Length: 249
Ligand SMILES: C[S@@+](CC[C@H](N)C(=O)[O-])C[C@H]1O[C@@H](n2cnc3c(N)ncnc32)[C@H](O)[C@@H]1O
Image: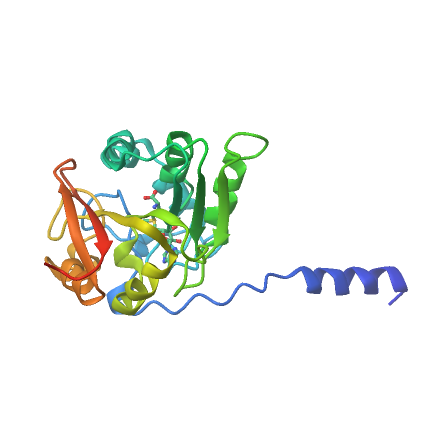
């Protein structure tokens, strides 16, 4: 081999992703399609995934998963403007969007808090790439994409006025420990808002078996030391709640 091809081989090797391997999905974590008709799962995909998904709950074909996450039908059910309205963000709010996906919420938060910062965190690099494409140039200079670890969103400690978890709470692993640690990234007076599918059988979203049963999220958050301060009656298929750190009264 001459010198030039040798160098090429070395360079290609060095540029390979060092992103850790996706944990193997177990039966309880079989991938599901958010926004897809209830009962359908992504196991029926015929084509080989173009790029695999680090999120074991999501469609293994990450490009298709991203398309689904930003599909018009799903965006309608999320009612993002209504969520933003209820969060009443200060113009200089510091926000952490945990499990930001392609940025559906992060982009809206960035607009609502033009003098603030949105840390948009996700374990899947392709989700962050999708967001990055939308904020190229000067489109949303106050969004910072952050590659999360499975047990840490890597938000700066003590800074968040709001952590938002949209359709992602049930994807998290070891949730009580995770939610206990999450408090450390809040600023004084900071809040946690969670939007997630209602339990049980619904005409949209993941099948029942892939979601949390009724009362589980509440029990876990209380165990982790959080107190619910609001439950908004805004969405037919989602629960939308706000929590603060501190003992349940
Ligand atoms: C159903 S999507 C929701 C995306 C976005 N919040 C929305 O509603 O449009 C769940 C997202 O959470 C991410 N995710 C899963 N586990 C995560 C974890 N432990 N930390 C951060 N992100 C995670 C997935 O990669 C995926 O982008």
